[in-house]
Length: 352
Image (cartoon, rainbow, N blue to C red):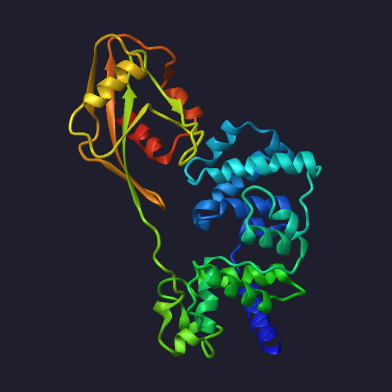
């Protein structure tokens, strides 16, 4: 117990002298803490900070967020990826507004029931906002604890997750759990980094197992289980007179749900000819008159996600007759597009 207290005291002292000045650390408001935690899931702080500030400025309270329409939220979220986070954010805001009168539940047990909130986020909110003794375990924590204490149990197996959670809980400062949790995560982000950690100035370098055993690059252990799926997207980009085009909303579950895109044909491999695209234009999009069809990019645009790699072609369609339900290219600014498509739109418009 004494060693655990020494670990926490050393860590918190380091944190108080070295923490970064981040906007969500200036408040114990659970709404702002929750907002930052959701945005920073699978997002680097350098990128997520501006999004946090946009959301905090746009929606002063959780009631404001709950009352917003999904289109506005997805547009603000554009570029962050993993859009299910934005939809869960909206859903949870509605629940807290209607069922909890806008007040976040203080207990871990109630927090973890909310959409988009797992063990890590529930522990973070409970400890930082409400001083509840729940340890947070994220990638930074896995790395620090595995190296300092020499734990080689894989972090992506249930046994490893339980082992690290138990250790983190035992090390937790019961009197100031929020500061302890933030200190441990900050230490992993600034000192005990994945590559080239700052071992020379590390506060634990005299006792760190990985440093003594020269196994820094071997810890933490993560089993390779991920199989990357290859997908082939063919977007039909209508360039119609009067500066208009066609877009549709992705309503099915999966990547980019509820975002907007150009009509899409997904093929099993890179298309060898235009037959399938012409068929789609005629039968699905009901284009009756003549049209021209040409590739915009000379090589596929490769877009990598966690579980899949998307090889993308953009096909420019110029019909002789204007189809129904067109929108202006300028109006695209009001729709949330995947980054892949927003990058194309910017490039295409600048080329014309």
